Amino acid sequence: MSDIYAGAVDRGLEGVVACTTAISSIVDTTLCFRGYTIEDLAAHSTFEETVFLLWNNRLPKPDELENFQATLGKTMNIEAAALKQLQALPTAGVHPMAWLRTACSMLALWDKEAQLDSDSARKSVAMRLTARMGTLVALFERVRQGKPYVEPKPDKSLAWNFLYMLTGKDPDPDAVKVFDVCLILHADHELNCSAFSARVTASSLSDIYSAVTSAIGALKGPLHGGANEQVMLMLKEIGSLEAAVKWVKEALEQKKKVMGFGHRVYKNGDPRAKILSQMSQMMTKKTGQPHWYEMSKMIHETVEGQKGLMPNVDFYSATVYYSLGIPIDLYTPIFAVSRVSGWLAHVFEQYGNNRIYRPRGQWTGPEGLKWVPPSDRR
Ligand code: COA
Image 1 (spheres, helix red, strand yellow):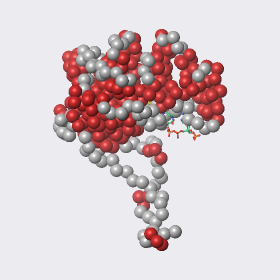
Image 2: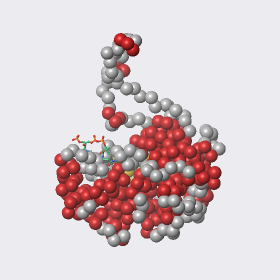
Image 3: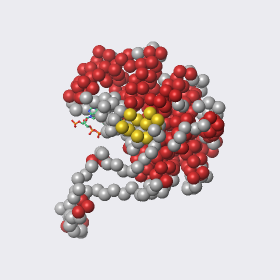
Image 4: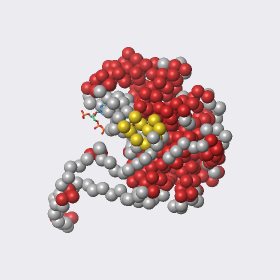
Protein backbone atom coordinates (compact mmCIF):
# COMPACT_ATOMS: atom_id res chain seq x y z
CA MET A 1 0.00 0.00 0.00
CA SER A 2 1.24 3.48 -0.87
CA ASP A 3 2.72 5.70 1.89
CA ILE A 4 0.05 8.30 1.11
CA TYR A 5 -2.34 6.21 3.21
CA ALA A 6 -0.06 6.01 6.26
CA GLY A 7 -0.92 9.38 7.88
CA ALA A 8 -3.68 9.92 10.43
CA VAL A 9 -7.07 10.96 9.08
CA ASP A 10 -8.44 14.28 10.36
CA ARG A 11 -12.13 13.35 10.57
CA GLY A 12 -14.22 16.33 9.57
CA LEU A 13 -10.94 18.11 8.74
CA GLU A 14 -10.83 19.35 12.35
CA GLY A 15 -7.90 21.71 12.82
CA VAL A 16 -6.88 21.45 9.15
CA VAL A 17 -5.98 24.82 7.61
CA ALA A 18 -7.21 24.45 4.04
CA CYS A 19 -6.51 27.94 2.63
CA THR A 20 -5.48 31.45 3.52
CA THR A 21 -8.32 33.94 3.91
CA ALA A 22 -8.77 37.61 4.70
CA ILE A 23 -12.58 37.65 4.91
CA SER A 24 -13.45 36.68 8.47
CA SER A 25 -11.41 35.56 11.44
CA ILE A 26 -12.28 33.71 14.64
CA VAL A 27 -9.94 34.05 17.61
CA ASP A 28 -11.32 32.51 20.81
CA THR A 29 -14.69 34.30 21.17
CA THR A 30 -13.95 37.17 18.78
CA LEU A 31 -15.39 37.10 15.28
CA CYS A 32 -14.25 39.78 12.82
CA PHE A 33 -15.26 40.55 9.26
CA ARG A 34 -12.32 42.12 7.43
CA GLY A 35 -10.89 43.16 10.80
CA TYR A 36 -14.09 44.69 12.29
CA THR A 37 -15.66 42.88 15.24
CA ILE A 38 -19.14 41.49 14.81
CA GLU A 39 -20.27 43.52 17.84
CA ASP A 40 -19.12 46.74 16.14
CA LEU A 41 -20.85 45.86 12.87
CA ALA A 42 -24.06 44.71 14.59
CA ALA A 43 -24.22 47.97 16.55
CA HIS A 44 -23.40 50.40 13.72
CA SER A 45 -23.53 48.86 10.26
CA THR A 46 -26.27 47.71 7.90
CA PHE A 47 -26.43 44.47 5.97
CA GLU A 48 -25.75 46.28 2.68
CA GLU A 49 -22.69 48.01 4.12
CA THR A 50 -21.45 44.69 5.54
CA VAL A 51 -21.80 43.04 2.12
CA PHE A 52 -19.76 45.86 0.57
CA LEU A 53 -17.13 45.33 3.27
CA LEU A 54 -16.99 41.58 2.68
CA TRP A 55 -16.58 41.98 -1.08
CA ASN A 56 -14.31 45.02 -1.17
CA ASN A 57 -12.19 44.60 1.95
CA ARG A 58 -13.07 48.09 3.24
CA LEU A 59 -16.04 50.11 4.37
CA PRO A 60 -17.71 52.15 1.60
CA LYS A 61 -17.59 55.94 1.32
CA PRO A 62 -21.06 57.58 1.46
CA ASP A 63 -21.54 57.77 -2.34
CA GLU A 64 -20.26 54.21 -2.79
CA LEU A 65 -22.74 52.92 -0.23
CA GLU A 66 -25.55 54.84 -1.87
CA ASN A 67 -24.71 53.38 -5.30
CA PHE A 68 -24.29 49.89 -3.88
CA GLN A 69 -27.68 50.03 -2.12
CA ALA A 70 -29.31 51.43 -5.24
CA THR A 71 -27.90 48.66 -7.43
CA LEU A 72 -29.02 45.97 -4.99
CA GLY A 73 -32.43 47.65 -4.81
CA LYS A 74 -32.84 47.70 -8.59
CA THR A 75 -31.76 44.07 -8.83
CA MET A 76 -34.11 42.48 -6.27
CA ASN A 77 -37.00 41.99 -8.65
CA ILE A 78 -37.11 38.77 -10.68
CA GLU A 79 -37.88 39.06 -14.41
CA ALA A 80 -41.25 37.83 -15.64
CA ALA A 81 -39.98 34.82 -17.62
CA ALA A 82 -38.05 33.40 -14.66
CA LEU A 83 -40.85 34.27 -12.25
CA LYS A 84 -43.38 32.28 -14.27
CA GLN A 85 -41.22 29.14 -14.18
CA LEU A 86 -40.40 29.56 -10.47
CA GLN A 87 -44.09 29.95 -9.62
CA ALA A 88 -44.74 26.65 -11.40
CA LEU A 89 -42.34 24.68 -9.17
CA PRO A 90 -44.01 22.40 -6.63
CA THR A 91 -44.16 23.61 -3.02
CA ALA A 92 -46.54 21.15 -1.31
CA GLY A 93 -44.50 18.88 0.95
CA VAL A 94 -41.30 20.46 -0.40
CA HIS A 95 -38.67 21.67 2.04
CA PRO A 96 -37.97 25.36 1.32
CA MET A 97 -34.23 24.68 1.19
CA ALA A 98 -34.75 22.05 -1.53
CA TRP A 99 -36.86 24.60 -3.44
CA LEU A 100 -34.28 27.35 -2.90
CA ARG A 101 -31.42 25.12 -4.08
CA THR A 102 -33.34 24.41 -7.30
CA ALA A 103 -34.56 27.99 -7.76
CA CYS A 104 -31.06 29.44 -7.31
CA SER A 105 -29.70 27.07 -9.93
CA MET A 106 -32.61 27.91 -12.26
CA LEU A 107 -31.87 31.65 -12.11
CA ALA A 108 -28.61 30.94 -13.96
CA LEU A 109 -30.64 29.90 -17.01
CA TRP A 110 -31.90 33.47 -17.48
CA ASP A 111 -28.61 35.12 -16.57
CA LYS A 112 -26.61 36.00 -19.68
CA GLU A 113 -23.50 36.62 -17.60
CA ALA A 114 -23.66 33.34 -15.67
CA GLN A 115 -20.90 31.65 -17.65
CA LEU A 116 -18.62 34.67 -18.12
CA ASP A 117 -15.41 34.81 -16.13
CA SER A 118 -14.60 38.53 -16.33
CA ASP A 119 -14.40 40.42 -13.05
CA SER A 120 -17.27 42.74 -13.96
CA ALA A 121 -19.60 39.90 -15.05
CA ARG A 122 -18.86 38.01 -11.84
CA LYS A 123 -19.56 41.11 -9.76
CA SER A 124 -22.94 41.66 -11.39
CA VAL A 125 -23.87 37.98 -10.97
CA ALA A 126 -22.94 38.32 -7.28
CA MET A 127 -25.14 41.41 -6.98
CA ARG A 128 -28.09 39.60 -8.55
CA LEU A 129 -27.71 36.53 -6.34
CA THR A 130 -27.42 38.58 -3.15
CA ALA A 131 -30.29 40.88 -4.07
CA ARG A 132 -32.57 38.02 -5.07
CA MET A 133 -32.01 35.36 -2.43
CA GLY A 134 -34.58 37.03 -0.16
CA THR A 135 -36.94 37.52 -3.10
CA LEU A 136 -36.75 33.78 -3.81
CA VAL A 137 -37.47 32.77 -0.21
CA ALA A 138 -40.42 35.17 0.00
CA LEU A 139 -41.68 33.94 -3.37
CA PHE A 140 -41.62 30.35 -2.12
CA GLU A 141 -43.80 31.35 0.82
CA ARG A 142 -46.24 33.28 -1.39
CA VAL A 143 -46.57 30.38 -3.87
CA ARG A 144 -47.05 27.92 -1.01
CA GLN A 145 -49.88 30.05 0.35
CA GLY A 146 -51.43 30.42 -3.11
CA LYS A 147 -50.81 34.17 -2.99
CA PRO A 148 -49.41 36.47 -5.72
CA TYR A 149 -45.80 37.60 -5.89
CA VAL A 150 -45.09 40.86 -4.05
CA GLU A 151 -42.71 43.07 -6.04
CA PRO A 152 -39.85 44.50 -3.98
CA LYS A 153 -39.49 48.26 -3.47
CA PRO A 154 -36.09 49.29 -4.83
CA ASP A 155 -35.63 52.25 -2.49
CA LYS A 156 -35.89 50.05 0.62
CA SER A 157 -33.31 47.77 2.22
CA LEU A 158 -32.99 44.02 1.72
CA ALA A 159 -34.20 43.46 5.30
CA TRP A 160 -37.25 45.70 4.83
CA ASN A 161 -38.10 44.08 1.52
CA PHE A 162 -37.79 40.52 2.77
CA LEU A 163 -40.36 41.12 5.52
CA TYR A 164 -42.53 43.09 3.10
CA MET A 165 -42.46 40.48 0.34
CA LEU A 166 -43.49 37.73 2.78
CA THR A 167 -46.69 39.47 3.80
CA GLY A 168 -47.34 42.32 1.34
CA LYS A 169 -47.53 44.72 4.31
CA ASP A 170 -45.08 47.42 5.38
CA PRO A 171 -43.01 45.89 8.20
CA ASP A 172 -42.61 47.31 11.69
CA PRO A 173 -39.39 49.42 11.90
CA ASP A 174 -38.14 47.53 15.01
CA ALA A 175 -38.63 44.23 13.19
CA VAL A 176 -36.66 45.55 10.20
CA LYS A 177 -33.80 46.68 12.47
CA VAL A 178 -33.67 43.33 14.28
CA PHE A 179 -33.81 41.41 11.02
CA ASP A 180 -31.06 43.57 9.51
CA VAL A 181 -28.81 42.77 12.50
CA CYS A 182 -29.60 39.06 12.02
CA LEU A 183 -28.47 39.37 8.40
CA ILE A 184 -25.21 41.04 9.50
CA LEU A 185 -24.53 38.35 12.11
CA HIS A 186 -25.01 35.50 9.63
CA ALA A 187 -23.14 37.05 6.68
CA ASP A 188 -19.90 35.10 6.98
CA HIS A 189 -18.09 32.72 9.27
CA GLU A 190 -14.63 31.78 8.06
CA LEU A 191 -14.36 28.27 6.58
CA ASN A 192 -17.75 26.90 7.63
CA CYS A 193 -19.18 23.87 5.84
CA SER A 194 -21.19 25.77 3.20
CA ALA A 195 -18.47 28.36 2.45
CA PHE A 196 -16.02 25.50 2.06
CA SER A 197 -18.46 23.77 -0.33
CA ALA A 198 -18.69 26.96 -2.37
CA ARG A 199 -14.89 27.22 -2.48
CA VAL A 200 -14.47 23.56 -3.44
CA THR A 201 -16.87 24.01 -6.37
CA ALA A 202 -15.26 27.32 -7.40
CA SER A 203 -11.82 25.67 -7.22
CA SER A 204 -12.67 23.61 -10.31
CA LEU A 205 -13.26 27.01 -11.97
CA SER A 206 -16.95 26.25 -12.19
CA ASP A 207 -19.34 29.23 -12.29
CA ILE A 208 -20.76 31.28 -9.42
CA TYR A 209 -24.27 29.80 -9.59
CA SER A 210 -22.81 26.29 -9.27
CA ALA A 211 -20.74 27.35 -6.26
CA VAL A 212 -23.71 28.99 -4.51
CA THR A 213 -26.00 26.05 -5.30
CA SER A 214 -23.44 23.69 -3.71
CA ALA A 215 -23.33 25.94 -0.65
CA ILE A 216 -27.13 25.94 -0.27
CA GLY A 217 -27.04 22.14 -0.29
CA ALA A 218 -24.44 22.13 2.49
CA LEU A 219 -26.28 24.74 4.56
CA LYS A 220 -29.47 22.68 4.46
CA GLY A 221 -28.19 20.00 6.84
CA PRO A 222 -29.21 19.97 10.54
CA LEU A 223 -25.58 20.04 11.69
CA HIS A 224 -25.11 23.40 9.90
CA GLY A 225 -27.83 25.89 8.94
CA GLY A 226 -30.70 23.48 9.54
CA ALA A 227 -30.17 23.70 13.30
CA ASN A 228 -32.13 26.96 13.79
CA GLU A 229 -35.32 25.35 12.53
CA GLN A 230 -34.70 22.31 14.76
CA VAL A 231 -34.29 24.61 17.80
CA MET A 232 -37.76 26.09 17.38
CA LEU A 233 -39.29 22.66 16.82
CA MET A 234 -37.58 21.49 20.01
CA LEU A 235 -38.95 24.46 22.02
CA LYS A 236 -42.43 23.74 20.70
CA GLU A 237 -42.11 20.05 21.53
CA ILE A 238 -41.01 20.87 25.10
CA GLY A 239 -44.03 23.16 25.29
CA SER A 240 -43.71 24.70 28.76
CA LEU A 241 -41.16 26.25 31.10
CA GLU A 242 -41.82 23.55 33.70
CA ALA A 243 -40.89 20.77 31.28
CA ALA A 244 -37.70 22.34 29.91
CA VAL A 245 -35.01 21.26 32.36
CA LYS A 246 -36.25 17.65 32.63
CA TRP A 247 -36.53 17.36 28.83
CA VAL A 248 -32.99 18.57 28.27
CA LYS A 249 -31.46 16.43 31.03
CA GLU A 250 -33.12 13.34 29.58
CA ALA A 251 -31.95 14.21 26.08
CA LEU A 252 -28.37 14.57 27.29
CA GLU A 253 -28.57 11.32 29.29
CA GLN A 254 -29.70 9.58 26.13
CA LYS A 255 -26.68 11.10 24.34
CA LYS A 256 -28.94 13.10 22.04
CA LYS A 257 -27.66 16.32 20.54
CA VAL A 258 -29.45 19.44 21.67
CA MET A 259 -29.77 21.61 18.60
CA GLY A 260 -28.21 25.07 18.74
CA PHE A 261 -25.38 24.02 21.06
CA GLY A 262 -21.73 23.22 20.49
CA HIS A 263 -19.37 24.42 17.84
CA ARG A 264 -16.33 23.09 16.05
CA VAL A 265 -14.36 26.29 16.59
CA TYR A 266 -15.89 28.23 19.52
CA LYS A 267 -15.25 26.40 22.75
CA ASN A 268 -15.87 29.39 25.05
CA GLY A 269 -19.03 30.75 23.44
CA ASP A 270 -20.23 32.13 20.13
CA PRO A 271 -20.25 35.97 20.15
CA ARG A 272 -23.23 36.01 17.77
CA ALA A 273 -25.32 34.06 20.30
CA LYS A 274 -24.81 36.82 22.90
CA ILE A 275 -26.22 39.47 20.57
CA LEU A 276 -29.06 37.20 19.46
CA SER A 277 -29.89 36.38 23.08
CA GLN A 278 -30.47 40.09 23.79
CA MET A 279 -32.60 40.45 20.67
CA SER A 280 -34.58 37.33 21.58
CA GLN A 281 -35.30 38.78 25.03
CA MET A 282 -36.36 42.11 23.54
CA MET A 283 -38.47 40.75 20.68
CA THR A 284 -40.25 37.98 22.60
CA LYS A 285 -41.20 40.58 25.24
CA LYS A 286 -42.36 43.06 22.60
CA THR A 287 -44.56 40.44 20.93
CA GLY A 288 -46.06 39.20 24.22
CA GLN A 289 -44.41 35.78 24.26
CA PRO A 290 -41.49 36.12 26.71
CA HIS A 291 -41.79 32.44 27.68
CA TRP A 292 -39.87 31.44 24.52
CA TYR A 293 -36.86 33.45 25.67
CA GLU A 294 -37.22 32.22 29.26
CA MET A 295 -37.40 28.61 28.11
CA SER A 296 -34.36 29.14 25.91
CA LYS A 297 -32.45 30.63 28.83
CA MET A 298 -33.30 27.61 31.04
CA ILE A 299 -32.14 25.22 28.33
CA HIS A 300 -28.99 27.28 27.84
CA GLU A 301 -28.14 27.13 31.56
CA THR A 302 -28.89 23.41 31.75
CA VAL A 303 -26.82 22.40 28.70
CA GLU A 304 -23.93 24.62 29.79
CA GLY A 305 -24.09 23.32 33.36
CA GLN A 306 -24.42 19.64 32.45
CA LYS A 307 -22.23 19.41 29.37
CA GLY A 308 -20.16 22.61 29.25
CA LEU A 309 -21.59 23.40 25.81
CA MET A 310 -22.52 26.96 24.86
CA PRO A 311 -25.24 28.11 22.46
CA ASN A 312 -24.24 28.83 18.88
CA VAL A 313 -25.74 31.28 16.37
CA ASP A 314 -28.74 29.03 15.74
CA PHE A 315 -30.04 28.82 19.30
CA TYR A 316 -31.39 32.31 19.99
CA SER A 317 -31.98 33.17 16.33
CA ALA A 318 -34.87 30.67 16.41
CA THR A 319 -36.90 32.71 18.91
CA VAL A 320 -35.95 35.99 17.23
CA TYR A 321 -37.37 34.71 13.92
CA TYR A 322 -40.39 33.26 15.68
CA SER A 323 -41.22 36.63 17.21
CA LEU A 324 -40.87 38.22 13.77
CA GLY A 325 -43.68 35.90 12.67
CA ILE A 326 -41.54 34.03 10.14
CA PRO A 327 -42.66 30.44 9.37
CA ILE A 328 -40.33 27.94 11.10
CA ASP A 329 -39.20 26.12 7.98
CA LEU A 330 -37.98 29.41 6.50
CA TYR A 331 -35.32 29.87 9.20
CA THR A 332 -32.63 28.02 7.27
CA PRO A 333 -33.47 29.75 3.97
CA ILE A 334 -33.08 33.07 5.83
CA PHE A 335 -29.58 31.97 6.76
CA ALA A 336 -28.93 31.66 3.00
CA VAL A 337 -30.40 35.14 2.37
CA SER A 338 -27.54 36.53 4.45
CA ARG A 339 -24.76 33.94 3.99
CA VAL A 340 -24.87 34.19 0.20
CA SER A 341 -22.81 37.38 0.65
CA GLY A 342 -20.09 35.48 2.53
CA TRP A 343 -20.14 32.58 0.05
CA LEU A 344 -19.56 35.06 -2.76
CA ALA A 345 -16.68 36.72 -0.91
CA HIS A 346 -15.13 33.25 -0.54
CA VAL A 347 -15.74 32.39 -4.20
CA PHE A 348 -13.99 35.64 -5.27
CA GLU A 349 -11.10 34.92 -2.91
CA GLN A 350 -10.85 31.38 -4.29
CA TYR A 351 -10.86 32.53 -7.93
CA GLY A 352 -8.20 35.09 -7.05
CA ASN A 353 -5.73 32.54 -5.66
CA ASN A 354 -6.93 29.23 -7.00
CA ARG A 355 -5.69 25.70 -6.75
CA ILE A 356 -8.22 22.89 -7.17
CA TYR A 357 -9.21 21.13 -3.91
CA ARG A 358 -8.34 17.49 -4.27
CA PRO A 359 -7.51 15.75 -0.98
CA ARG A 360 -6.94 12.02 -0.55
CA GLY A 361 -8.95 9.29 1.19
CA GLN A 362 -7.36 6.56 3.30
CA TRP A 363 -8.24 3.22 1.71
CA THR A 364 -10.02 0.82 4.10
CA GLY A 365 -11.55 -1.61 1.60
CA PRO A 366 -10.34 -5.01 0.41
CA GLU A 367 -7.39 -5.45 -1.96
CA GLY A 368 -6.41 -7.75 -4.80
CA LEU A 369 -9.91 -9.06 -5.64
CA LYS A 370 -10.37 -10.89 -8.97
CA TRP A 371 -13.48 -10.64 -11.14
CA VAL A 372 -15.50 -13.90 -11.33
CA PRO A 373 -18.40 -14.73 -13.70
CA PRO A 374 -21.89 -14.23 -12.18
CA SER A 375 -22.56 -17.99 -12.04
CA ASP A 376 -19.45 -18.53 -9.83
CA ARG A 377 -20.36 -15.83 -7.26
CA ARG A 378 -21.23 -16.95 -3.72
N1 COA B 1 -25.74 18.49 22.27
C1 COA B 1 -25.22 17.52 23.01
N2 COA B 1 -23.96 17.09 22.89
C2 COA B 1 -23.19 17.68 21.98
C3 COA B 1 -23.67 18.73 21.17
C4 COA B 1 -24.99 19.13 21.34
N3 COA B 1 -25.50 20.09 20.61
N4 COA B 1 -22.68 19.14 20.35
C5 COA B 1 -21.63 18.40 20.64
N5 COA B 1 -21.93 17.51 21.61
C6 COA B 1 -21.03 16.52 22.19
C7 COA B 1 -20.91 15.32 21.26
O1 COA B 1 -21.90 14.35 21.51
C8 COA B 1 -19.54 14.85 21.58
O2 COA B 1 -19.57 14.20 22.83
P1 COA B 1 -18.68 12.89 23.12
O3 COA B 1 -17.26 13.38 22.99
O4 COA B 1 -19.10 12.50 24.47
O5 COA B 1 -19.04 11.92 22.03
C9 COA B 1 -18.76 16.15 21.78
O6 COA B 1 -19.72 17.09 22.25
C10 COA B 1 -18.09 16.67 20.51
O7 COA B 1 -19.11 16.81 19.51
P2 COA B 1 -18.89 16.63 17.97
O8 COA B 1 -20.22 16.37 17.30
O9 COA B 1 -17.79 15.63 17.70
O10 COA B 1 -18.35 18.05 17.57
P3 COA B 1 -18.11 18.59 16.11
O11 COA B 1 -17.07 19.61 16.23
O12 COA B 1 -17.88 17.46 15.15
O13 COA B 1 -19.51 19.21 15.70
C11 COA B 1 -21.39 20.61 15.79
C12 COA B 1 -19.87 20.53 15.92
C13 COA B 1 -21.80 22.07 15.76
C14 COA B 1 -21.81 19.95 14.46
C15 COA B 1 -22.04 19.90 16.99
O14 COA B 1 -21.75 20.59 18.18
C16 COA B 1 -23.54 19.72 16.81
O15 COA B 1 -23.97 18.75 16.18
N6 COA B 1 -24.35 20.66 17.37
C17 COA B 1 -25.78 20.61 17.20
C18 COA B 1 -26.16 21.13 15.82
C19 COA B 1 -25.99 22.61 15.71
O16 COA B 1 -26.40 23.37 16.56
N7 COA B 1 -25.38 23.04 14.59
C20 COA B 1 -25.18 24.44 14.30
C21 COA B 1 -23.72 24.79 14.27
S1 COA B 1 -23.49 26.53 14.12
